[in-house]
Length: 163
Length: 147
Image 1 (cartoon, rainbow over the protein chains, first blue to last red):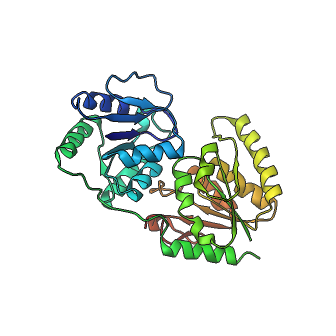
Image 2 (tube, rainbow over the protein chains, first blue to last red):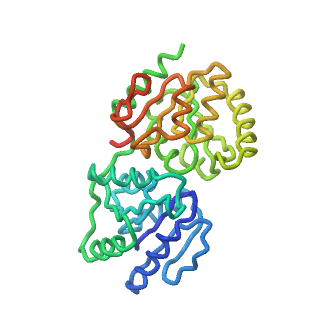
Image 3 (cartoon, chains in turn orange, red):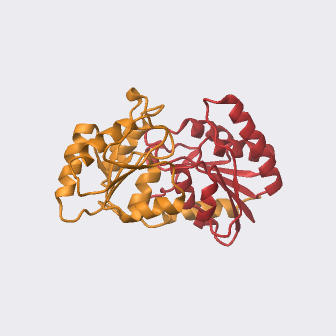
């Protein structure tokens, strides 16, 4: 199963539409998409609205690949659950976000070797097809459940030093 | 000691949950914007507030009144937040009520601090960025939620 998630904010129909078309090429594979406020009617995706944490986790765990917007929630969830993730940044020019920070996040996280990124829907199609050809898809990196020791220690001291 | 940990739904919340291990052994009280998140904090106290953003000024005001009341009744020793608008409101409430406040800017802000973070950097006692390039005298870098 491929799980597509666009986070909790605005619609991201460009991604949903592109994934719907890709799903049409894989009749034997299930594609589940978490959508919000969408006007687009999918032909090949099974769509769900905002999910409670338990349902979200279940879909995440069952997925062989996560396709998502460049939100850190989705990225961190994938990396901690050891799931490969392909990210498409929301762009301001399509009014998918109020600024261009998803593009910057995607570039940075790609450059640091954490995630795969598709910068447009053509690249998305190529990358999904390339990944699904593989016998097994591996995540590029894994994360533990907590922040870096240095940050935790610094915060612990901040709390101790409350006067 | 009571620690108040605040974040709006989505990436802010996921990041907050990776930080609160720092306060193990203390009472941690959470605030976010989705009821379902209660299941993610075990036995810790959890409060929900209405989500709001800059587009809806009346919504912001309503949330702020809710936040002030809540922070007043919880009386934490320290407030930590990863944003966004509701987190900033808790920082403001904390400052008004004389509580120590810590802002950890979201890791999603790689080129500059978030809008809320820029405001928070003028108000919060302590402010962290998660990218070394964005650190200044006041804005500290001590690693990130990636680990």
